[in-house]
Length: 115
Image (cartoon, rainbow, N blue to C red; front, side, top):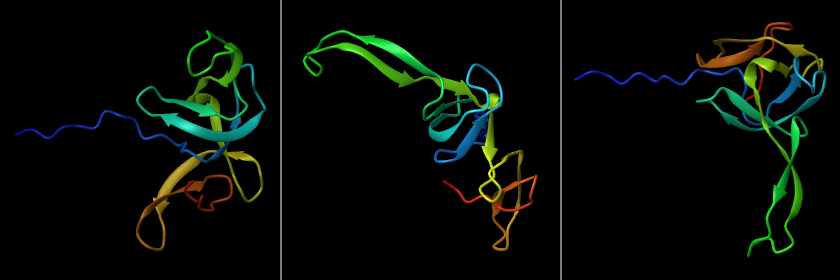
């Protein structure tokens, strides 16, 4: 029996990270990751890529109207902000003291806390 291979990519961004947008209309803005869709390599970031959506009146929302919501942005356009100095940094993985693989900032070499 063959083993199933996990085809989902391992992303450098996780829910709860503070990220900086490096490309696109929202370049230079920072925000917190609300959700990550790893199968599509996209993330929803608070206050970034805000779109307007027309909502039809329904039983749940009888008034309807126009809502502003965040749309997803590709993870290649995001960089994790290093908590120690507040600058965007590339991310690597290495073993910590407990022999567990943990993310670290390549700019400062410090470990990044999960979430």
